[in-house]
Length: 224
Ligand SMILES: Nc1ncnc2c1ncn2[C@@H]1O[C@H](COP(=O)(O)OP(=O)(O)OP(=O)(O)O)[C@@H](O)[C@H]1O
Ligand SMILES: [Mg+2]
Image (cartoon, rainbow, N blue to C red; front, side, top):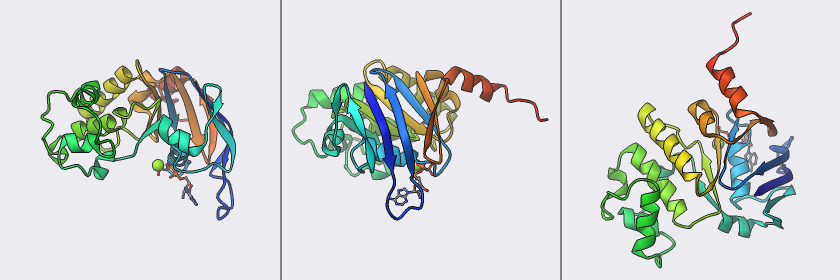
C-alpha cells in the first residue's frame, strides 16, 4: 500500500506551493489515475514519488515504512512522458540492460513478454520499432528492475487511436501483477481501467469516483 501524508512541495523561488497538502492511498495491484490540466503539478508529484525531488514537508509510506528519496528510487519505476525520446541503447537488449549489465537473458525475455514484445529480435534497433512498440519497450525498461510501484506520465500521449487502445489493454493486464499510478491531462478511456481516481488542480488533489467521472464525460450536461 502506498500512502502519501500531507505532502507539500513549495520551492522557495515559487510564490505558492506547487503541491498542496496531498493525501493519497493506493492499494497493491490497483491502477490509480490522477487527472489534471497542464501545470497542475502531475509530473512534479511523480518526480517526488520516484525519488528525483524532495518534498518540502509530508511523507511517503510504502506499507508501514516511511521512505526517503533513495528508497523511493529503488521502489518506483518512472516512465517519463515520450519515454522513447530517451532511448540510448543501439539494440533492444542494450536498452533493457542499461545500468544492469548483469541481468540474464531470462529476465530480459520475461520483461519483453510482460509487454507483449517477446516476438521481437533482441538485436533490433529501438528506433526501428513502431510508436506503440517503443512505448511498450519503455515500460519493459522499468519492469525489468521489478519496481514495486510503476509511475506513468501521460502514457498514451502521441499514440494513435488503435495504439492507445492496445496500451490501455496492456496497462489493465499489468495491474494484475503491479501497482500503477498514472497521471494524465486527458483521462478518456483510461477511466474504464482505473480503480481509484483523483483530480489535480493547482496542486490540490481531490478524490473522485471513476464511474461518475466516466458518465460525466460520456454524457456532458446540455448547455444552459
Ligand atoms: N523546481 C521548480 N521550481 C519552480 N517551479 C517549478 C518547479 N518544478 C515545477 N515548477 C512549476 O510547477 C508547476 C507544475 O509543473 P508540472 O510539470 O508538475 O505540471 P504538469 O501537470 O506535469 O504539466 P504538463 O501537463 O504540462 O506536463 C508549473 O507551473 C511549473 O512551472
Ligand atoms: Mg507533466
